[in-house]
Image 1: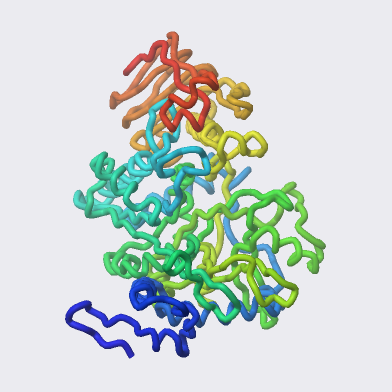
Image 2: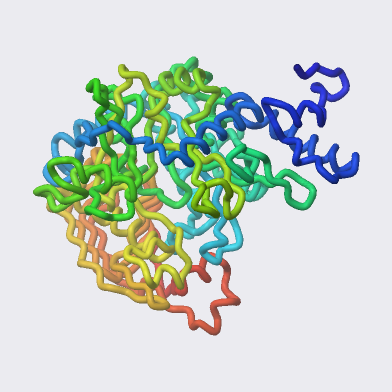
Amino acid sequence: ARRISAMTAMELFSEKQLSEPPFNQAHMFEGLSDEQKQGIIRDLDELDGKLPGGGLKGYLERARTLLADSKSGKNPFEGLTPEVPGGERLTGETGPGSASYAEFERKGMEQLSKTCFCLVAGGLGERLGYPGIKIGITAELTTGLTFMELYAKYILAFQAYARKATGDNTLELPLAIMTSGDTNAKTLELLEANAYFGLSTSQVSIMKQELVPALMDIDARIAVKDGHVEKKPHGHGDVHALLHQHGLPDKWAKEGREWLLLFQDTNPLPFRSLCAILGVSASRGFAMNSVAVPRLPAEAVGGICQLKGPSGEGLTINVEYNQLDPLLKDTPAGGDVADASGFSPYPGNINVLVFHVGTMAQRLATTGGIVPEFVNPKWADAEKSKFKSPTRLECMMQDFPRLCTKDDKVGFTQLERLMSFTCVKNNLADAMKKNPPDCALSAEADIYACNARLLELAGQGKVQIEAPPDVNFLGITAQVGARIVLLPNFAISLEQMKEKIKGKITISNKSELVVESDVALNDLELDGALTVRSTGELASKVVKNAGTSLVAIPEAELKSQEPSLQIRGYRRAVGEVQEA
């Protein structure tokens, strides 16, 4: 046992202790000087204090079990039969604009005062050719807002609504941000340089993810590199461990908060549907609600399934696409095939998740924050005794249902992609080869298209927006027509937006419309650029001006542009913008 010491708060491991069971790491000290040995011991001591689920000992014990299972070829889905899971499909006749969607939105708006937020932001933009953190990327060029500022605006708009609804003017909706060693300092820098984008420092918690030891072989012997423990990322499932280590789900539950939205660094679209998603969670009593999209058979997206065991118990969970088809081969469908809708009956996972806070706190308490891990070694030999390179344990945030009890309801809310999913993950060269390109251009186009669709739905026949043409920048094509940005303080739900559209609106496909305020729109004809900052009512407005446009940046000039333009290949050219 390790003794508490007054000097260091805890005595370091000894070489002897680490060389014997349960650690068995004698190889790490071979041929090292005393000073080098002390360096290794300090590394392991630091890891022991940070590794969730029983420190270093727990990590190595779990690793040995998982590595043995991997060697023997154990199938985690053995004996389980996939079935279509239970959830709400808010698409087509039950999608935005329908009575059922409106009802879910109304229920969800009642839940906003009890909602918390967690941004998973461990990613750098290096793969995109962007030098900073991904939440610092400009979401769209019309307003120039970064993803982080846009998220803050949504949370503040939900908070303003919740304060009004509850009469509590001190109410704050908490935001936790998971960072990594790569992004932690830059995230703090971005927040501090911008006064937290209007959020108070007391409502934001920063949680830094640590790396885990890399393992050399099936005996879980830790790899050493350049005189230090070699470390690797543990996966985004660490968000659960960090929330638990920071005591947040427990604290939030005690404060009477009920829901937690986990969202991604470059996908703002789920905020547009959040009220409906919360309404589903509250109506169905879901402990975990996966926001999902219609999925094509064999698409490289995980599918949400209910896996039935031999005794009839079910587990609703995401199954990765490469495991889904083999699992479905033995079902009557005979594989990953479409149903009558043309899509797979198994909704596509986008890793936007809503948890019931109290249930989450209880389940994480039982494991010390760990969600079940997996290991994916690249074997160097047929006997599966050696790895090509060191491996590590990994975990995924969507595997939380493995912690749930049979009484916890786990389900999904399926929405059209336009209402729930976009991302910036590919650089220009990769984006050219992919469909969808999932780059800065496609994400910007998705934001405009989502806003245009909401405006049309809110107008209930009164809004006409000219169809968007294809645009092409540096070989990447997207549909970009009217560049419409409806900021969250205009409306936080489709139901609210319906109240704001009073008369006919027509917008040409080369127009730009920004609505920044709580305003009603009554008869607007737009062929140009208009920014609305007024409150009350904007009535009988005809705007025809030179407007703005997106124009290509010549390749020779790209390198001299700011990073958010370099990853796009285009900029916003301003002719004339009218302000109201």
